[in-house]
Length: 227
Image (tube, rainbow, N blue to C red; front, side, top):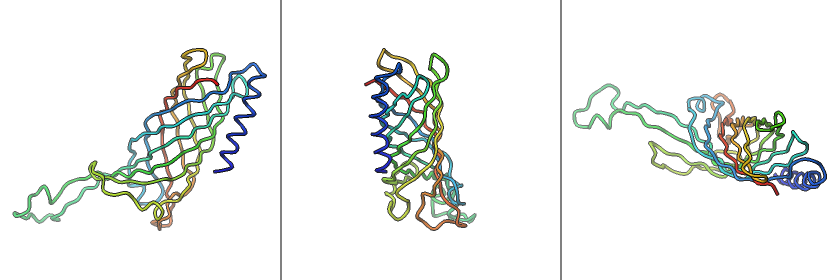
């Protein structure tokens, strides 16, 4: 993580100097926010879960290195949520006239949320002279900070973070979006990004020894301004 932060600082300084001497845009910083659609995958238990919505928010740093290419980094607080609808039958087919049937059978929705600080480092390419459409790709590193769970919207308990999940998650991301100029120095962009986890995030014993990995989609709205 220290090496990644050092790389971001070095890139910022070097590309700022280059941008001032070449005919390209100046570096920019911005604020981003948007919904996430995420899930976990891997072992038998993880694959029973479904995608669920939550949100992410953070800051961006973009450093042009040519007219079409730039280096993009984010520091985001991201909530990766998954859910499972659990059907239960308390009376196992035997009706109890004393107990309300509503308490003998039903369905509950379990939601788990993993809280991360995510730092992607991407190469962005602007398509055409107008540069309104872009694509970007690169690796990301996520620092796990907490987990929480609900049943039918009611918070049950915070998880045992240290026992259940590893501190770091690594993966790759791919995004496509569009960018609009608000003024000579400000811009608004909208990006659809896919984050594909590559490493095992679980510290628990797995079913059939399969690993647990993350998968998430972000719809990112970013407001940026040149330095």
